[in-house]
Length: 433
Image 1 (cartoon, rainbow, N blue to C red):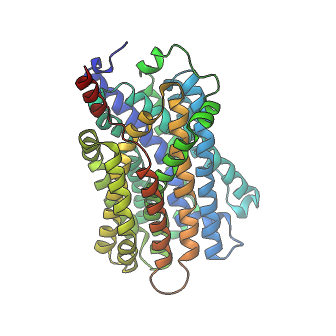
Image 2: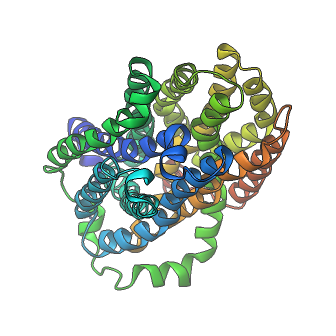
Image 3: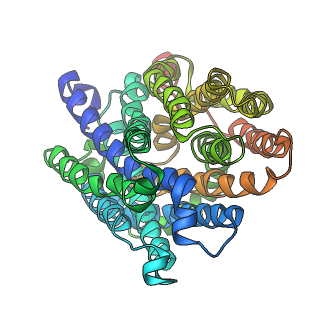
């Protein structure tokens, strides 16, 4: 059998870099919509609504992307388990990039009426469909090439992609917000980041054109005919537990990067520039520490870090909301940073953990479905629920309670999952020999 340890470090570095770049581009596409939803989409596409209802409607279209992601994981997971991981990377990048460019071209409500939000909804669905396939393909291609004792480290490279995508998307928004008037930003400025997605998608396709297929996929003697049916029949409990475990990561991330942005600007009166700067700084630190958390996972195991991250999130949600409510940039940054460090403690090792939980023949479908169902549970509803319960004067403790409840749910799910670190299993085999 092919030994994945034979893959040399330079080859792994090129593979990991290409996976990271593609994932960053796809998450750029996904995140730029979330920022636009928090800042401008409500009044432009739902002008007949009240300001609160318009924001909720914009976040509703944001949530559609998460609903589409499990469907994308089923569609592209089927391709990945039947035809290989590599084709998934190309198809998902094309779909997400095209949908994102199209969002930037949709006329506002005052030009085409109700067709505007309908088109927005359809394109957001296509964005989510593409992203649902991206994660599974990128992570599996990296994880299945990596040596077992460094799988967590190499698999964490695609997990840095969301941080880069977020910083890139919001960096463009920050520059436009700081240099354009409110009228210019609302008229055309917000569209520029969506148009830029086309150039980024072409760059990503070029980077991925030379990637090799996963050796573990090539070694399979028989591929699953109906991967989803096998996952539902044989791994349904595992899918539900992984989705529940990952829910807190999505909830925390989008509470910080989407809901808090809208809350700070609309309710606290903090400028867009200051809010974006505070959030981006926290995301940069989170991205930089991702490989370190992944190496800890290689050394101490995946499950302990997931338990630690979800436990830390449960303890920090009330302090985070309290710090946000001050409106002070340094205090808000501190609240966001600790929350995102709890998040990355879990998500740095997930790219290795989920593939190890599933057998190779259904791995692309199982891991991707579990990952993206977690997005529905934690990411799709969080901005909507948080906006709805944060009404009235005073600190929005209801948001903190909601996030804490999700963290406790995830803690319980991770407690029921097994450890998968290959080094531990290899040592048992050696002792038996």
